[in-house]
Amino acid sequence: MDQWNILCDFDGTIAIEDVTDSLLERFAHPDWQVLERDWRAGQIGSAECMAGQVALIDASREDLDRHLAEMRIDSAFPMFVQAVHAAGVTLRVVSDGIDYAIRSILARHRLDGLPLLANRLVQAGPRSWRLETPFSDPDCRIGSGHCKCASAVREHNRHHRVLLIGDGASDFCAAGEADYVFAKHRLLEHCRHAGIPHVPIVGFADALELLPALLAGQLHTPQRLLVPAIAP
Image (cartoon, rainbow, N blue to C red; front, side, top):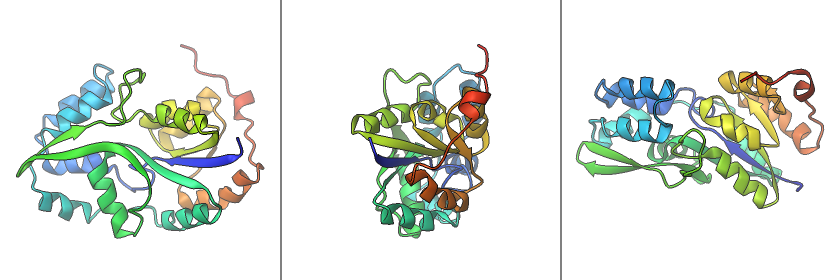
């Protein structure tokens, strides 16, 4: 199992902002926040939450496109992609966000050729939308629209080592299936507490600097030995 495959989150990792939240804040009925609270309280899974939220969006395709044109990505991400491909490594964008938004933003940076696994946005009317979840898993522990841990397991089944790059709660279960994690924000704290092999990053400038050491097998993490898991 020598070949690395990189699974990379989008919202808050590649994209500076959470693009899905920005769409809801701008175009959805305020009831989307009720669903958000229910999800954070553990009363519903993220797939149910997002499907309900997307159904509350009132926007034309042109409205969405104008908004997405304002979204920014980490300026070092294109250079990281170039370095990954030069090393013969595969990078997949894995997101519990919205495929249409992700493809639109990546296309502006000529990165729309990257493999993408995400929830599918379907236009239901001139100003209405619905969400499909082709990468869900009935056994997903957190009810995600896209079960990232299942994606990591599939890569292992292809005899690939998995590097996860992410920042938040949707990456937690996948981190437990990954061989190594480049972690930001809430994911960093999760990896520390769970003893998952990782290194902290601020952004893709750090990831770019760390990539050669990862591929050469020179990254080591004492955290697995030194940090106990959180007691239940």
